Length: 470
Image (cartoon, one colour):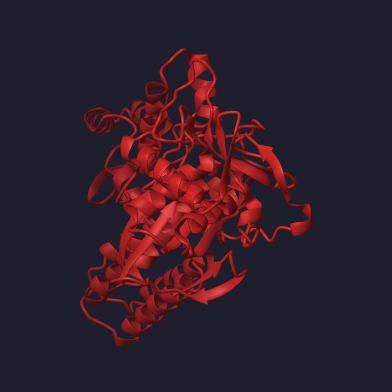
């Protein structure tokens, strides 16, 4: 596989360095609010990367994705809500897990919280290492990283060293690019704020030290193979992670840096601070399905900005319906026979799909290969040149595609869980059947339209009536 490495600004051949296992870290959600669709563009892209590494690359995975549950925003949110920090962040962690499951995101091997005791201790231990190596100083009860002690500072973000303000401090967890200054590792706390004393003085960790410590503790030390996150994390967060981790260990922190571009709304980044956010629930409230949202989020190349529109989601729904209608046609094949040209066509598509995904996770090219295959096989089925003996090979190919993309299995799970109870659907179908037997076609149409408004389509055929989700 080849992946674009933000550190080198070029594509590089990728393989894990130890025992065929990819050690990957993802900066997860800061849990002061429910995750929005812009957040999930990153998490869906990382999920597809994880799946491609497993099902195309053939690697095992040791994947860690954290929850940032102590920083400026979570503390302010908990204080405003009048709740203890852990209780306040619990509800957003639960909401994230629900949304991630609903979007078909695979569970990862570890989901640590920054405030887990073993993680806080790892942060304190890392600060002690940095102190031993001369990278820190204390001021007003806080401990800071001296960026002029780390010559490589700025290598990820390609900072202009003339603009780096060594000796000037910044206490905020997030700051703008022009403020490349000594950053806080351990913060003195205000009265009433959560605090721990683990050898760094009473206080709490800065945002940046959290991920460094959790990644190295849970992934077996440096170097890890891949560090992922949104492109907005390149600076300051990931730059500071490199400085801390390499300053403490003397080793390369991460071999590859994988960053996902922004999701836009009206050409602005989708962001809570801007106020142009949509959540998973907002998509459902529009009557759209999350399988279509997942398809939309992975349909564009992860390194290009993607513009969110409701029309785009409807187009994703139509594309996904083309896939499922095609598979329904394959399942319905009855004519006997197996055709070598079908086998060849399918194998070429699988090879081309794997090549696209191995070429820096080019999902749009991979989807193009799938629809080329659908088009070719629909033509062949129209000409009676596809038989029941070909169906298993075709379905196996689509199962492979979906191991990586995860949209068809999500659609199937949605179809198996209708928007209204199945007993209600079956009762309505029986009532409609009775009305039609009594030649009360107006009543039959009323029942059909009522189900349609509730998201259920009835399809009549010679074999009877079946229902499916709208």
